Length: 190
Image (tube, rainbow, N blue to C red; front, side, top):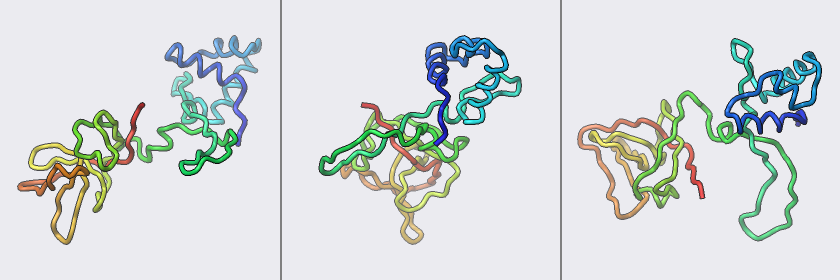
């Protein structure tokens, strides 16, 4: 694992407080650097590590690893076991959840038809468009001019949508079924 420069936390804190990246002179001040050359080397190291990027004008932008959260290890979901905290890596949630950023978006869930699949009202679903749905996928679809999220079911030549709540009957399209996206993840904030 590559070592993160020790002043990077100050840059992250600045970004979160100011909602913008610091200038080279602000980085020099944060890091206690007097030389523009030393500051330039620090910034180049941050770029090489993927922590920051430069736009076409040379201004700094947060890089792919900039918003990463520490991955400290695993937790036992069965019987309790001794655990030690160990920094394994850092990972951004976007990096973990999104394979194709240009084809991915989020939707807020309304209704209770998918509670049996663990998708509750108020949850956010991360969906990906442009992928081929298959039997058993949870999809976002327009069925007979109405939008819904359900299981996609296909047997032989027959296609229908199925809720994950027994109080809702299966939906058999009468006119048309257009699949817009496949659900890739559910996000719930406690």
